[in-house]
Length: 91
Image 1 (cartoon, rainbow, N blue to C red):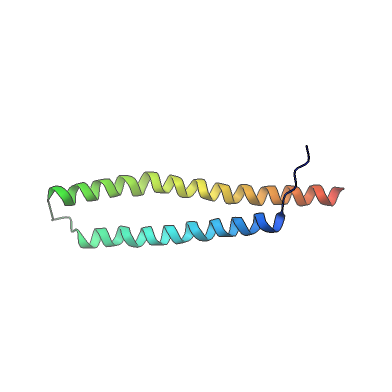
Image 2: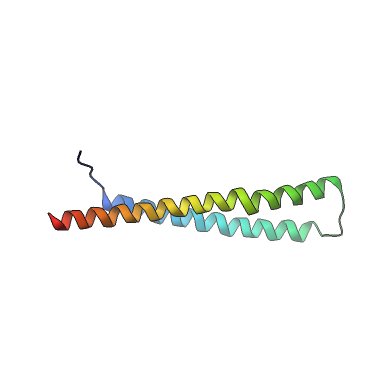
């Protein structure tokens, strides 16, 4: 089976993924700081405690894992491009 890799498109997709990941990470850092600033530690209410706990669990685990998966996708695209280019140069 022959597979054709559009190297320019794949590299552009990888760059787009990098940009998206960076943007999300930056915005999440801002949101994390905002939550910490607006809900001080001394504030002890049901809603504030739940928000801080759920945000911390979500931000630290789920989002971080998702960002890593996106980074792996970008890396895999670059690897595919390099392998396609090496294959093409060998023929």
